[in-house]
Image (cartoon, rainbow, N blue to C red):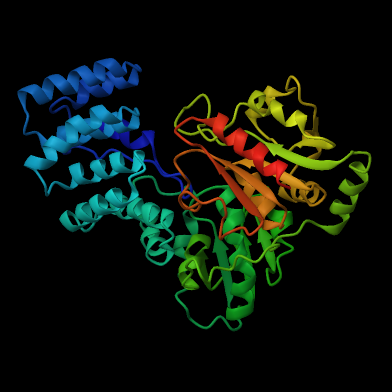
Length: 440
């Protein structure tokens, strides 16, 4: 059914949420949904639009169809058409939660943050148990730096239709501020990816210092295990846990709520992560022949929703202008499919991919660089976490922790942000990166 397919198109992560269309009433085969769903499975988006338009011409008061169709158009980035469907419907049905929610998604896609917040709040007033509305509201609030409320609302991630696969720790009693003296506390990532893990690992040392658990165990990615084992107060960093005995568990993304974090008091001091000293020394020797400034590059990001290319990724060829920098050596920090863009015509990039087996390896390499230039992916977080100067190349639709229209980040004091001037405009980002480099 189309309503189920739509929900799966844009399931948000903790760092890159997108508007998610609301399902229509659960009436299998009713209305336009079955035929449109089959068309969408075939990739026939024109037919989906045709089916919904025909249905709404005959049933102009079908508020759920208007909401679903409008949300679908938003997911296809057909924003003016989405507005033409949903805004008139909202005039007739101002209290319809699905319409309010997807109209919020439209405002979000247009970067009308205050309007998105207003519409998501109205959707929640109409349907207080609307978990996705709470989650999307949290994203918009955090874009404005309203972390206190936003981080609390982000707990709605636990109620969404696609729960995390690693849900087993929920059976362990949740830590809610009880004394941890002589207690074993498990911290685990319940949502998101490597970037979230790196960003919120900053809370582990304060947790160990201020709450003094008998033992602090961090359930983490295998890629991060060696890196996180060096955090003061972390007794164990484990990537595979089956029968470990602990007294309490807490989600890593709930720690900012525990510490009542906001723009003024978040633990942003860096470095809060460090690679093993022997690895840093090894890379210092490997890079000793490199001339001038040593600059790490990461141009690719994760792939979501079946896209052939992430919209957070910069085509490597667009960075060829960096070759004009005097006395600079460029080193690839790229993993995954984007490495297929190497070599880059006009820009010599050293590639040590075979020697970068985990985050500790990459962190040790970054320790020996002068600067990192990265898109919005784990490498940018890693550079900021080890205190290395980093330029973040950011798409127009800001990630929820990068705020709006700022070139600095309260999360990483060593970070500067080069933002797209408009959707898809990487040329403006590259120009700004070159300006930043000329100033240093």
